Amino acid sequence: RMKLKYNFQNTVLPYFLNYSIGYNNDNIAGYQLYVIDGRNFIISNNAIKYRLLDKDINLGDNLPRQLKIMNFKIYSRFNFDLGYASDPAYGKNNFLTNKLNYGYGPSFDIIIFNNVALSCQYGITGFGDKGFFFESGVNF
Image (cartoon, rainbow, N blue to C red; front, side, top):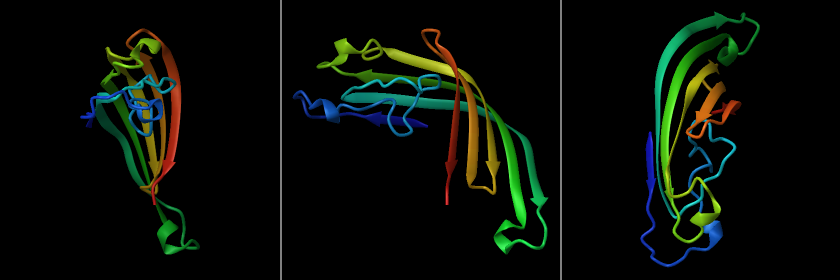
């Protein structure tokens, strides 16, 4: 996945419009605790994924039709992400702005009923910070 934001306005933007990496789903592996503001940014999320388990589990006949069969999947993943945020006005206040940042690390994803996701990631930043990060989500 690659995402690009370019602002054609050449004046200084208000700070609250100066968001880029670290908001919504625009993250770099290992940088989940960091925000990199900028008027322009590019982010590339790369992953090699391997399916470890893909099983349908019968939970019994006493449940509603939608819940009788539970899909259960486990994936292992290795992430390598790149990102760059450009901020000529406020960039001097953030050591991550105006430079190429990268992060990498392994993760495991568990998907239940095809719409409940749990993820555990070990991320390493380009400057050596390390950490475990847990994410979850439901998609109906």
